[in-house]
Image (cartoon, rainbow, N blue to C red; front, side, top):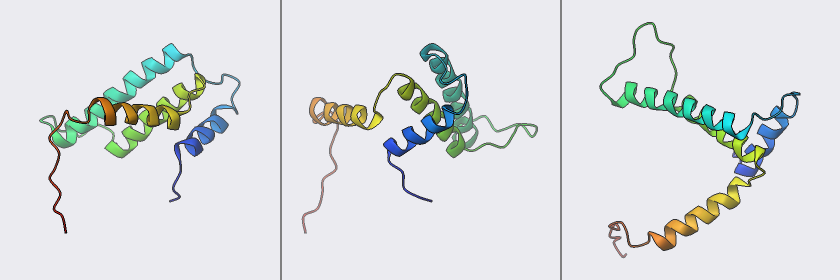
Length: 112
């Protein structure tokens, strides 16, 4: 497997969506799809780590697949709104590293 940047993934999704006349769904429809995909991910996590085992008649899906479905829809939403996810991610990491820098208990590192 090749390593892809988020920029690569955004371009790949855009190339895929651009081949269809319908194009991207509206932001509202994509948000509804995000909710749907998150529910599917939650269901899989519950099957693997929770108290609710799969029914024998249920389709076999994996957490990997559901995470990727969620990521695809997130990329569609970002693309439809012309959002560069790498830039948005950098901004949110800056926020966490500054605003929340002392919020959690740090792991003590041994000095060699």
